[in-house]
Image (cartoon, rainbow, N blue to C red; front, side, top):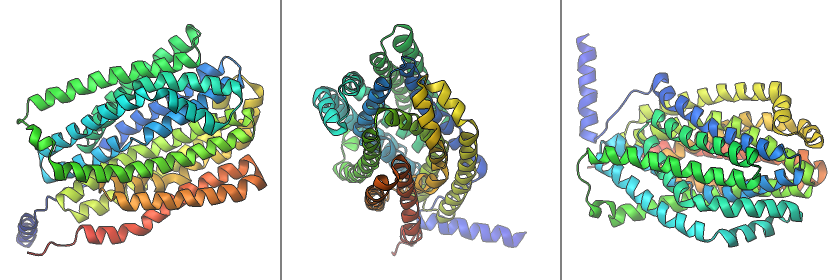
Length: 460
């Protein structure tokens, strides 16, 4: 007993001398972050399904295709700015691990300033973005018309959406999954309610779905800023000089640049996926749009644990706690594989019924049923991709993440060119699986070396 106490005291002394702040990573801690955020993230594909179902009730495949193409163009633009969420999470988590409250708040305000500026530019650029989307997709005129309507309206929410990214990044960096759940429930709950009201009951169709997004984003932003601002007022004063610290801003911009390239590459893969679906015809495009929402459902099960990995990895890096880091990797991966298997089984069992709920078009239902197994197994193919992304974002190893995403995009393009001409839409889905597997295993291959470097003892 005395030996154990002495050993623990020596370990604490060593931690103190190296600036380490070790903490215990347990299943309960992982679940406290992952479960609320899994529920929160699941509301996003649920929103996509509701939007698709609202438009699908009009029985017009062109409207469904226009909504899918418009949502894709929107995602290409906005997910490129996802660094405002993920970069903020990693930096706040590391400051939290060091016990630096002022830097946590400074990171948030830096992200919020970037969000407002970028959001206003995006809202002003809605017409050329819509025109570029129509040129890229090359769809039939009625699909283009619906897509143009959706993009022009939805981009009005740009400032609200990007500020929400910054708020959510700050919240998740502190491991406050329940707060994140509240924000997402407000955002997507109001969005779904307005989508049903405006899109279906009032008959506005695609325009109603887009206006619903504007309303949901604005409400969530007001709530998030109100709660965070109240918290900040109760804490120590933060000077503008601290927020605008040049080295910190440059470091954040470097991190954001790498994450932006990574996010743009990710969306480029999805854009190519959808564009190839356009070439197979409007019915296949609509069927793929429905199945991609199912892929998102499976992915958002994993995203909750990837978010837990972000926070815990970043906190461990800031705390200089290698044992905490390694346990965070193990636990989130095990939970991820378990949920991926469950999600795949659920989609195989109930996917046909979900397709029938989403659309009344018989041709689209038949087409979606053919490719449903491909969508169902994306969960298992994507486990490592989601989890390793979380680890590397939290640790702010952005350069490695960027490079491996570019490698994965190249592998996807090669698989697409080889398989789509031979196998049609089956080849398109197979190429997506290649993309997910290369992402995950390439990052896993780099993890051990990065861990050794990150926790190497500092020399006096």
